[in-house]
Image (cartoon, rainbow, N blue to C red; front, side):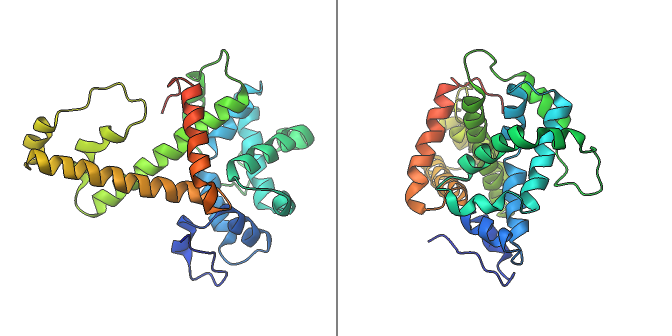
Length: 256
């Protein structure tokens, strides 16, 4: 069961699994915590939009201003009126809204002064441009790169959250030893169970159990994260499949 949004403001911990449409409605009505929940989703998924703008031919500085300006536009409730007409995915909503913003308000975005008094969130623009330069630039459209980058962002976020959970349990070394079994498209050879048995000082059977538990926890967190970005739990599997297809289309050429 996906927790619902609590407008009392007492359910901050529930933001982690609240579906995006509920977040948007709460932010639109300025309910306590709604804007914070929306900001958290945007903070995680900003880079695919920056990459999209760059692929559309905007300069690094313009892409920065457009991405930052778009989130200000979103958080100031100027795009939230669309929420009732949209279905399903935060990913689709965000890209459609951004494309509309590029078309209709690019001039306004270019005129924003970087370093304005109010800023959406501190973003790593220099690293973003370094990552963008490594993106495949031949046959992939901006939309396909957006989807593949969204998938990579989601998977990386889940890995970070899982690593934090293991570290909080005092099992950080176990996670570091086993995380390669979760890496999508990682070309590094996986260590043998025997080598892990020696390193972790457990039996081979124990290593297999640890890997099984790691994968199970990863799967749970992955579904929870995807659930944040769709409006209906019934859409989770389809969204996971769509993101896997996006990664396959990119042929593993996306950098972390």
